Every structure is written in C-alpha cells, then in structure tokens.
Image (cartoon, rainbow, N blue to C red; front, side):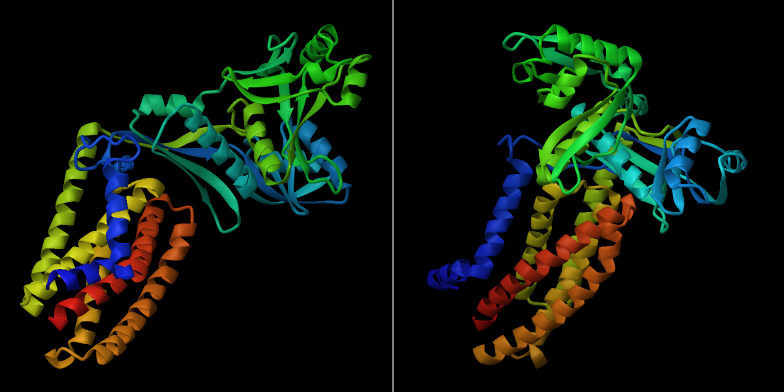
Length: 487
C-alpha cells in the first residue's frame, strides 16, 4: 500500500476514531493523571479484591421488616409500638413496618398484641430505602477516610428486603477493614462569635435521633433534615446562641457543623427559632439545605454527617475473608498469562483458517486495540477482578467471531468483490453483528443492574466491550480489510 492510500486509510473517520481511542486509552492507563511512565505493566488500572491485598466483610442487619394489621389509627399505633420496643419504628407502607432493632418473631408478636396490632409476616433485614442509606453512609465514611478501590453492595431480595451488605476493601488487612466499617466520626456543632472565630456548643453524643430527609413544607422544593437533642444538648445550644448573640443577630453568628474537624454545614438561625430560643430550650431542630437536586443531595449528605458515620441499625459480621498481597499478585500474573494465551490461541486458529497474514494480522491488531480501549474505559469506571478479567477474555472471543463474520461475508467463495458489492456485503455482515450484540446486551443488562457484586463486573465489562466493538472496532476493521483486499 503506497503512502497516499495509507494516508487516506488513516484519515478515514472510522479508522481515525479507533486510533484516537487507542491513544487516549494508553494515556489513561499509563500517564494520566500523574504523567509518570514508570508504573509497570498494570499502569493506573484499578484492581479489585481478587488481584491485590484486601479484605471483605459481609454484614447482617440486626433489624426486621414485618407485616401487620391494626384497627387503631396508624400514628398512635406506631408511637405506642415505638415506646414499647424502645427503638425506631418506620412505616414502609400501609401493611409493613421496619423495626430498627433485633427481635425474635415471638417477641414482636407479643409487642404488637400489647398495643392493639397483629403480626402477619416477619423477615430479618431492612427496607430497600434504608439499606441504600446504609450503603451511602458506608461509602461516604470510607471515601472520607481516603480508602480507595472499595465496593459496597446491598443484597436485596425480590420483596425489596435487604438482609446483608457486603463491603470489599482492596489494599487493607482484616483488622483495618473492621476498624473502618465500625468507626464513628466526631461530630461537633460550633457557633460563630467574632469574625471567623468560633466556639464549641456540643458534640454528636447530644443528638438522640435524626429524621429522614424531607421537604421543608407542603408544596416546597426546599429540603431539610431534622434532628433531636437531649435535654443537656438543648440547654447548651440555647445558652450558646443567647450568649453570643445569635438569637438577636443570626446573620452574623452562623451555626457551623463539623465532622472530624471538616465543615459540613454552615447557616444562620431561622428567625422563628431565634425568637423561641430567647425564652426556652428547643430540642427539635431542622437544618435546611436548599432546593432542587443540589438541596436534596446536600440534605442526604448532612443526614449521614449528623449520624457521625454511625449506621441507623446494628450489624453483625456474617462472613469475612481476606486476600494476601502474595496471593493477589499470583492471581494477577495468572490473569495476564490467561489473557495472553487466549489471544495467542485465537491467533493460531485464525491463521489456520485463512493462511493469509494480510488478513490475520489486521484482525488480531483490531482485536488487541479493542482490549486496550476496554481497559482504558475500565480504568475510570470499573475495578478489575477475576470476573472482569473473564469478561475481557469473553470479549476477545466474541470479537474475533464477529471479525470472522465480516471477513467471510466479504470473501464469499474466496473472491474479492467489487467496491459496490463489497459495501453491500459489509452492511449485511454489520447487520448480523448488531443483532448478535443486541442479544448479548439484553442478556447482560439484568446482571449489571442487580446487586450481585461478582457477576456485576463481568456484565459491565462485557456490555462495554460489545458497545466498543459495534460502534468503533467493527466499522474500522471493515474499512481496513477493504483497503487490504483491494490490493
């Protein structure tokens, strides 16, 4: 192929897109963000628990979701049950409650009978909403502590009740993992005095309960988080706000909330609350965070901070395990060998079929480029564990299958077609590939959306690989093989 044809081939938008994505992937893997080429074979790729030192914990929620019936007004019934059980009782729907403390079924039957209700179903665990809150709390806590490469997955049944949550922490040992998951932060409320100076009011131990995020008023788009102080906390709060002038000049005396000495909320007293604090202690407080999506997200984060990283329910360790650094390195080497053997084996089979280096080499290079692009994308969105590596190997196999479909469709009866016939055959081959890819996407999508942490990585890598193939590498290969066959 002369220089003019080669230049035309490289400038073709399909081939150019392939080359640009390969270059960008190499930069992402080996240079971005530190631009340090001395990173070894793996570069900036994130490895999961299977391929490096780490630990996993499977936690069991010490709580229940129960079905009930009662002839009493729901509000009165739930308040009485709350007092009877001495724990938070949340209404999930008209027939189900969440009990945030562990009780055996007979104990709950007796408690419901005593307040005018009847137990109709019992299952240990939490509602999906609360389980998602627990997941968010753990993720926020772990990110705050600077721990990277972490997975938190709730295991939720078809009835939307989650009994377990699994935490995987790559790069830490078992003792450190248990400390991270069980650690509670130091929450503090301070008050602005003069300028940027502040004074301590109370710590998080004075907060007795935190309410779920809610809108500030009927028809409002402003979000808030309510919390309750004990008597000592309410007295300290009122004393500080009166002493430093927040009740008469709220705008210049912000209340500042900190978690582990980091500011998480700052705002002045509301006018009605300022007036009330001048005459009495107030235990029920509410922090407003703003409107819209930003306000809702800020309120959710503040709810976590008010808990000081403590989970809304107790948990017990139902299972645990760890991977040593030596074993993780061994698994990593085995994965590299398996990948290389897969590519080599595929190359030999393809060469045996066509016996033409001019066809086999572009096919293998296209397949290799697809793997590089896939790794470049995975570097930002997905940890590479054993399941993800299996997904990459599967993509290598399906990718070669589709390239064979294109090649065989074009070389019908071993003859090189005219350009017009070539385009028709290429279109037909790409149509077959799109249908096959759609089938794979439909099959993998449920696994990608479900809370099955191991299979989820396999599904995500497979889906991304299929999309890269259909949108980038297959069209580019069709253009490349056309230029080669025309020679």
